[in-house]
Length: 64
Image (cartoon, rainbow, N blue to C red; front, side, top):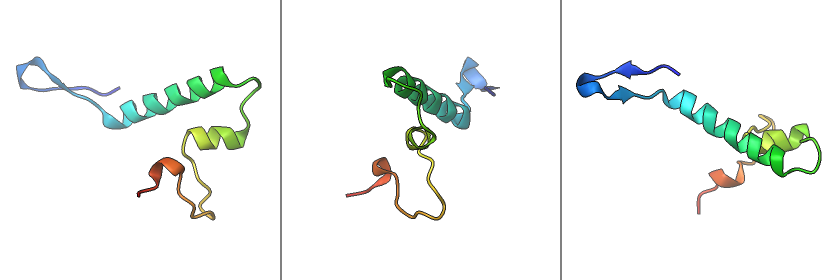
């Protein structure tokens, strides 16, 4: 993770790296809850990967 020092001893966090860590955590949770190996479709679902040919958004991305 890239961290840049800032005045006062605080640091600016790399938001991309934090997002990747969060997705990895979600994948680990899904894998540990599964009785079998995760299918490629389930992995895509957990990582919020969509088919560019399918315009249906991920359920978490739906807005009321």
